[in-house]
Image 1 (cartoon, rainbow, N blue to C red):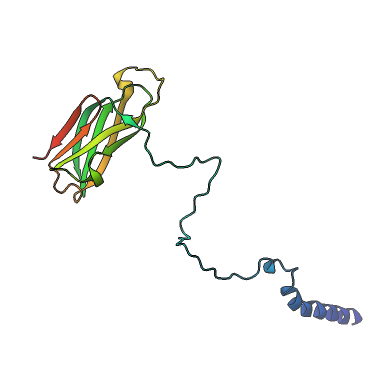
Image 2: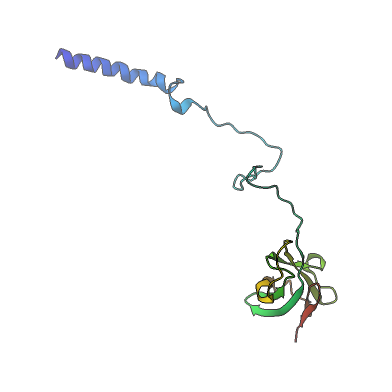
Length: 169
């Protein structure tokens, strides 16, 4: 009886002291305090991660370092749902060309007198061998919606030595 009375007395003391521990610095839940609202002057979307500078990620430069491709060999415009797929094949001057881009010559992809013109470019590193034409082939395709193609009668792709164009029937 004396042991159970002692256990009851000690457990009562421990349980009553829990209220004190909950508000003390010993409780890990209290280590950072309560959240408070901070007003910001700039618009920040918390769902979009902010880019941080890093030694592993180079700073982004918006200029495209590509140069015009030597020759355009094929230009096809294929109808797809909601628009057209413009597919271009070309041959670079040397092997090792990469990151092919169809750069619009017209401002905002708008046709000039019904002609939509693109320059075929690629990043072509120096010091590579010429090789066979098959080893220098490049392919690029872009999608344009029906709204973007409204008023376009001709699509032209320009390279260094030639240009190809396709007209609507």
